[in-house]
Length: 557
Image 1 (cartoon, rainbow, N blue to C red):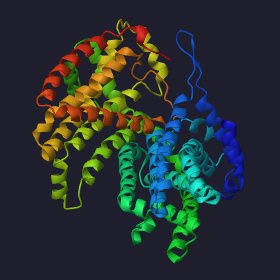
Image 2 (image 1 turned 120 degrees about the vertical axis):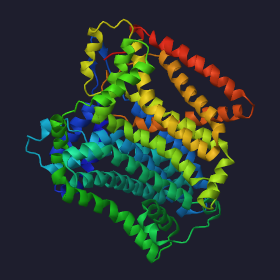
Image 3 (image 1 turned 45 degrees about the vertical axis):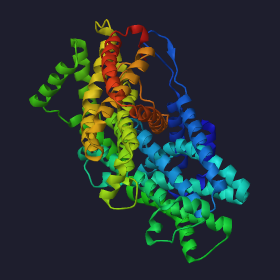
Image 4 (image 1 turned 90 degrees about the vertical axis):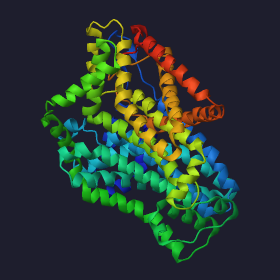
């Protein structure tokens, strides 16, 4: 696989030389980065060899391929070329952008290799382009997994030329989304200090997630069912020229129908030139400050002094005393709470995923039903309690998202302390860790959600909210008790994935299935209230069993 990526890079050698990049150095850096991503063989404390495969990444590609295959049928049945290809481009760009934000933000802002590379005679431009190219290699695989089904259907319906053109346009959209996302990061770096950058980067990622999701929903609203099935294209508006998926849709229309006018020419011009303009802009304007700012972030981190805030420390201890039962659980509770507050790279991995899971329900509520005023849309929402149920489970999956990442850390080698300490039942640490996540992340979301649901649907949905959160908690506990577990911050960060976004999509799917079952249960009076009591008893019992998990069910690296 690495050789395949390198051969692709060699094909683009003239392009990199035009960027004034040292191609030999870039090729060497990218090759080493790809090898390091794949080289996950180590020896654990018991001297048993442990290797990490790329199964997660290939599973992600397979799921992308299946999703695109299901969606590609719309090309065959759609009459409007502009509408269907604009929608396809929006979907692909959105999925790639969300994968970039949720999975590769930490890679973009990683400074681990600076100690090795910065002292060498490598210019800033080569380092920046090599870092972006490293990410592009993974996103290229994901783009191909998405594009191939669409290419096949396009070839059968519109011919080989249209299929090849779609591949080329998809590649341009990938370049555009990667470099456009990096421009946002680089602009932020340009106008903030290193210490300030560390504090605002997560907020910025949430804004970026909201922007991309808003753009995707905007294109979805523009492309209606009549446009897809009856060929009723909307009139071109001036702001269409600021929406890249619409450029792609109009370009495909020109290639397939050979309809050409001044407006279509402008769309084709934007499609072919803007991605390269963005590349040259990043390369010439921002490359000089990138590595300096990344290195400065770690310097600021080392110089930062954590003040001794007695009130905050007292709050954590009070909460741990309320929500835990043993001293070991309290220690794990406070440990996880503090690390998740201080570890910048943990927040870089988690917060974009949380933003996606929490923003999606906002868009579900915000787009509503009907085209009237805000009050009228709220009235329409009140008629559909099913949306409220789905929102409950989407927000509940925050627990699963954090739990899947809590075991990973850059300082995973320090996990030998777990074995050195006199810990008889590691389940107490696992239980304390889960309680900290629930209190710190899930409880505030539940309180906020109870207010939103009460305003829109009334207090009748509050028992459904409690039932939904208990269902997610019990599901997580059952899986944890039945499977092997990893202690907090005891495993290496997985950098060769693409799995966070696809995992979030899987959580959305699971939330939809459970929400559907919940919706049917709601139709029977008093059933939810009875099952809430059963769930409460079950969660107490499962936490007790989780606390008793022995070392045999704990996996260490």
